[in-house]
Length: 293
Image (cartoon, rainbow, N blue to C red; front, side, top):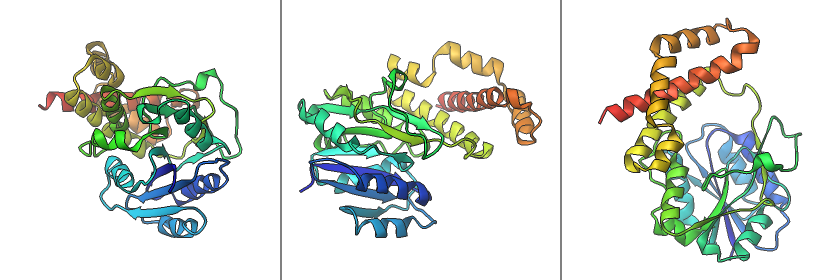
């Protein structure tokens, strides 16, 4: 029986997934572990990658056609056999003792009462492997890129809220319910990983779509949990909403989007212009959603 269940939700990222599974195969950890890969409707060679690695690792693949990250991870939780569930993304590389770091953090205390997270080190390529530094410390309670928690705690609070069916906030919302249920946060420096974030891998259209979806899900989070923490975390406080209306009204967003798409923004201003546009889209969609009900 495994002691740790690693859950990875993925879609159409076969190359990333293969690298993540390769680093899982190389883990130096005493505790037996299983891997559950939830394929959330891939149309690339992801099924073949899962099938190949199931003969190398204690790995099970689950196919979930409905596009929903929370739903996909809930399917993994349903199938988990271990007491401790560990989440990571498909675009990560795991140091040799990553899993051991999570296991030790739970063993040092009562594993059922901790959500253990570790440093997430964003790197531009697979060749970059820096060690964690103080800037990699995170106050996030529950980020599914790198977190572990007791399986029964997850089940007791109902897992991920599948109403968060677009991009963003589903892990933060689950973390809030876990915290309400008495789960404490523990940050384990040795449980770090490398998160592959190559430059310019996402088109502007994709970034705009994700910003819009994240804004809508932020509104959903605030409506479900109208707390001071949720309002601050999402940026749904009055001054920030006013800033969005003032600095990035629809005509400005349209102008920025057109200039960026046509390559008319000077290179030294491109990063700032893109950030302003994405922030404006996020805030406008959050505002629209909050005002709709």
